[in-house]
Image 1 (tube, rainbow, N blue to C red):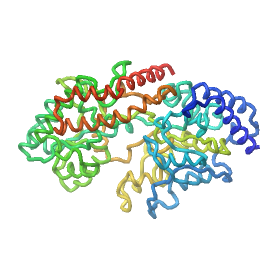
Image 2: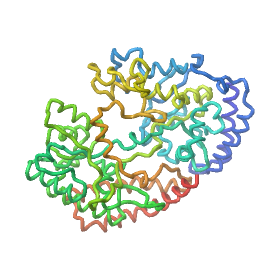
Image 3: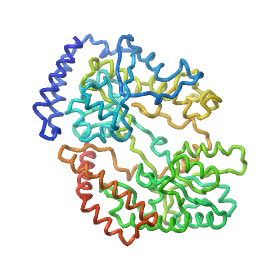
Image 4: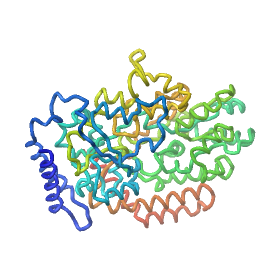
Length: 543
């Protein structure tokens, strides 16, 4: 019966393809609707005795099902002895009753990797595929219409936990649906503490030495950095990776006083592109001034995560932009130094009394670590039930913390990590220890706790990162077939922007050339891209 059902599905998808494929390999949204309608008729005729659809379904399944997935857990990291018998990927198979076959060809969180592209080209797909179909060329509609993955709406009897979550939470449903309401994946849904995990911190002991308060305005930042350089002889008063100028709104805090950021942001319901705004030129001008005066790390173009961490830990830098984990690493590295103190920084403001607005931010759903069911899966019910486990109460606790009694216990009703996570001599990095027994971030899950393994001092620092970026961040949208080619132009525009903006800051290109820079990206089609982004946002609002 299951094999016949799979063959029938393949026939339906083939008919859909013949009816809707265009000459460029793209299909219209109408063909997605057609596939949904036809699969709905089939779903209604499904065998009522299907155990995976039973209202009284319980885990584990019978252990006879093997599901393949394009992953390599832990990237080959050796499992330490303390985690043996409790390793997440072993235990989840026991708890769900499936056997997992890991085939590699992992896709990157935010873009399609070469390995994953080769997997698709091979024509042989695993049962379940983890990929960012949002950033995939053509988006999830193409992924469905080209028969890589199936639309999920008509199979919700197999994933009641996620279906209930989406049906009862309009915001979630809006985020993870296509414009026509199609569900295409089991999503990774972030929450506040995992959406804003990067920010600025200052060496409080250095502030104390120069008698300055924690800077609030952009002018106060400038004055503090100047004193760090001139009075404390710091070689890199402010340090951060240059990539943060362009990724995840990470330096939106620095540009916030001018009301702009890179790349796209919302001004009410209007989509704007940072460099086209006068305020962004003013921001870049200020950063170029800081760099020229030695207030920004002279190695800005070359530093990476480890060197930024090292400079902030060693005292070469007084203010650093880092992920919260790296800030904790700096604190831990100086635990023996009673004078080493770190304070979190709010995003600077233009005028005293203003409220910080922009900050680092990743959308609740950005497409990363989402998992879909392939068209070659012969047991959709088992695959959906396996993935749905993460959204059940039991599954969410296990996938967030590991096994109760081993890695965590309830303390005053709150799940609390035990010392085997927080104080493990064999795996002293609490985040690394946590990853052996849980999979709380890089997986299809509704995040319920991403930071409790961190020290209380670090969590207090993180609180200062929060502003109102949710009001400005451009949401995760999908594009029509007609818009795909225009959006593809963005890659070249982005590359040009990154090169020239960094050169303006480094002083390699004079700011008198700013207008020519704008003319260049105008000629590359930035206004067309902006118009498509606006249209996609308008549809998103109407979902």
